[in-house]
Length: 134
Image (cartoon, rainbow, N blue to C red):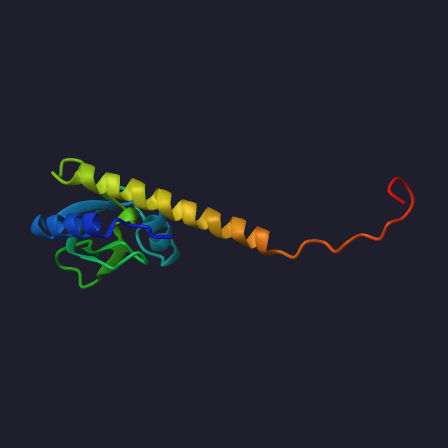
């Protein structure tokens, strides 16, 4: 299943590159990762997106973040795991991309589960015993 519209994703990536740096906050999946690593998982913590690139259907639009200008620590995160500053001119386009990608990934995962269930071997023929159809 194809997740992203390639041309639209590349177009958005180019627009984002032109408007760097962008302020963003961590969404739930990224907060969870930060917490697992033992780092500050404050939802109000602001990050600065310094670099943006498209990594295909596997990762979507990827962002390189930094928490502080003085920090050497960088994070590579999918844009679907970020909340872009709502005042940014591309915020509505990013949100539309995030909704589209998240929905497609969810459908892909559901299809994977359904196909696994359908792939199970059906029960063998039952031996006829007592009752009707003898």
